Length: 194
Image 1: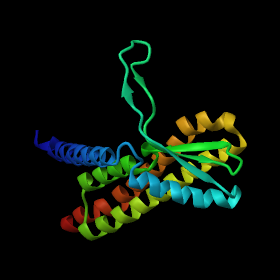
Image 2 (image 1 turned 180 degrees about the vertical axis):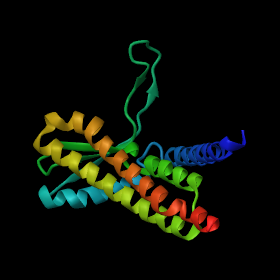
Image 3 (image 1 turned 180 degrees about the horizontal axis):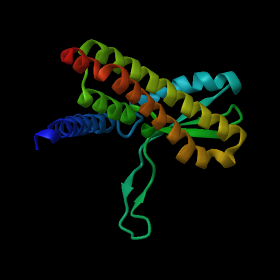
């Protein structure tokens, strides 16, 4: 049992941080209902700035959360969550940015892994902030890429949203974790063994 103690400790810390972070995130999103939360709004306005380079005159329309329970078997839930929908100057729809697009959920996952895995404190703090900034940038570029695809080749939007860009963002996270584990996390243990 003693041999499994580090793995069990990692899992306990990971799930504790992950569930606390996810709970706090859910509370945060709920506080802004029926409107779009602040982080989603922040990401959307950065996206508009980037899109304006290609497509001037982007318009934003907020869609309120209209999630309502229906008592039918065919469609038990109708409506959509709160979103900011982007349109071209000619009122052609581009994309809608929902709270799941803001990157916070994946940032919580990243943070939970990093803290649970452990390592030297100063590099960890720098790695946390650097990693969160990197995730934000990759996520923003992901949404920008999806918007360009929606404008130019909309038939590819489903595939790229569901599979390609999802894989890209998770591979980016795995890359950051790999750098942490291989370069920094064990340096504390290596110095202690010397």
